[in-house]
Amino acid sequence: MTAQIIAVLNQKGGVGKTTTTVNLAHALANMDKRVTVVDLDPQSHLGVALGEVSKLQTGIDDVMLGHCDFTQQLIPIRENLNLIVAGPRLQEIEQLSEGGSHRGDLLRKALARGVGNADFVFIDCPPSSGILVANALFAVEELLIPMTSDFLALQGLSHLMGTIKKFETALSRKYRLSIVMSRYIANRRLSKDVLNTLKKYFPEQILATPIRETAALAECPSFGKTIFEYRPGWRSAKDFNDLASDFLARRVM
Amino acid sequence: MAEDDESSMIGYDPLAWMHEQTGSGSLFPADNQVAVLDDELCSEQSGGADSLCSDNIDDTSLQSNPSTETDCEVELDAGIDELNEESQPMDLDVIENSEQINESSATVGNQVVLESIQSIQNVTVLHQKLQQILDTQEKIDIDASAVTQIDTATLQLLLIVKLSAVKSQKEVNIDFPSQKFIDAANLLGLAEMLSVDQTASGLF
Image (cartoon, rainbow over all chains, first blue to last red; front, side, top):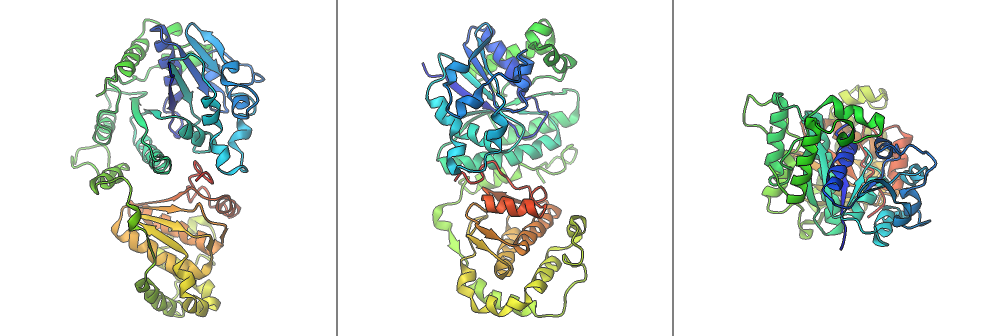
């Protein structure tokens, strides 16, 4: 079986990329799906959020540099859930200026060598528009875009869509694109207006369950826990369970 | 303005360009829309060159006010006048080498592809082309992937066009910048203001 590989990206910071990756992945793992999460952010926040804090542990950096295979770097971090950390050399890759088109193709080639027996691979992208994001866009066919419901996030999305469309043109293919509403504040008018705007431009592409803003989601990374471990009965855990179901069933707004 | 609903909390819709592109039947312009600058633009260039020689140059000069904050206040045409002031010694070249100017860039709908060498000699033509597009489109995509040489005048022009576009709630994007383009923009401290999209820099 071929793994479904999804890049979680948005060049705007603070929209919930890592929170979405960690908790959606764990929700899917709890549903007996085999999931691998890859930290493509040199800040290594994904690893930290899952309790893997070693700064020396190599990860996707060595895979992209061709020093080892993807499967060799898998860390079993929870039941059904594997992690590949960023690794100390990922920052070097971000700053590569030599190598032409080759430097954008490192991840695609690495994934092509095999990703193990995962059902889903989520790639948590950095909040930037650099070479690492380019690598993700070359490597995947599916994008998951976490969006907050504020104006600047819309502005950022406009920029991101410009980039995505340029890649689609250059690569002669369309991405399968989903949006997840993150940090959603239901009783704020602006949130509803942003959501309505998004529905207009992305019909059938916004996953049905918005992830509501809560303090618990902000707190759990510091304990290296997902929401299902930190506050299992709380509404955020329910939101992510529902989101995982939406993701599997392709249930949209 | 995206929202017809006056009570909307969103004043300006940054995604509006997506519907505009979709409305044209295709997200991307067809290849056969590619057109190198035509003779008409070249003849305009002669007029533009005449104007280069005029004494009617605004004092709000890029040269005399090099700070970026001041640049923000300079209107597009005034800024171009100033750029042209710098280019006066080359005016004759600009007129005589119209063929060379023709090849400074190509257009595809609202996309402009910069050719390899971008110098002060091309600034007037490039300005006219960008202004033409900006008059009719909401957005310009400037493909800078082929640039191997670019001078300060061209970078200043791009900056002014971008800032003018922002005032009109329009968008100017610089895509796939070559390493030379990025280096030059960084050297002048303009990379951030130009919002150079480095995602696909040098990859295509």
